[in-house]
Length: 309
Image 1 (cartoon, rainbow, N blue to C red):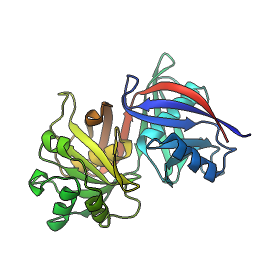
Image 2: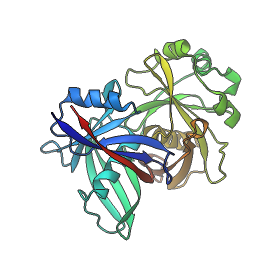
Image 3: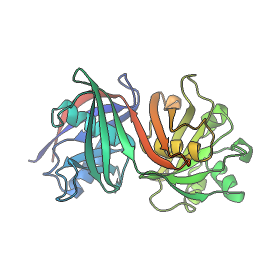
């Protein structure tokens, strides 16, 4: 019987039972891709990660395979943070002062990961995402369909900021709404959501609704990540990949004060009882071009276990 050890963590929170839960298999080199997929389905979380040796010549320290219950995906934010928190906590990454940088190989490429620590204790993990790719801007009837897919009215959509496809490693449709009440009302009509998905590329992780009307005054945005999974609407409590897209979108459309490094605090998960805080930093050049996107936050160790295959 094959055994595989896993660690459960909560990401983007300082308290247990907040943020986004993740299962990490830190020693997964003995597992086949099929077994990884079955384990991800068994865990029944938004993502599960499997750490294997980096490919020769990649220049990475670790290769991380990221699975949702029904497929492998190229990149995701909270799985990156949670995985490298576990690797550092277990001593597989030697902490070098207050900031340790390592490289992760994923299907999206080789990306830096920054581990912040004080006195040997990990305070937060930051994923350095790809530079943003701005895709399709949705207009007119397309916006109306997106709104209906979320059981909202066209009038709930921000009048000066259209929904747009953005990717910093994993593409999302960023959809700004007028206020927090509209964000809170969003739910999802599965059939219309499926119809709206036809306007999106195959690998899109669906719709990220947001507003500049947060619950906490220290936050910048209040957001929700809604996906269509197996014909049902699923809500993600804290989405690192979408937060990078969101920060890039806000800077691109100048919806927040722009600095050389624009700092944004994105709150998420309030509607489903898993409040989360996601730190976003978007670096720009003197000309205003986006040069870097960083997404980070704290991680909490929740539990350990062993699977038997």
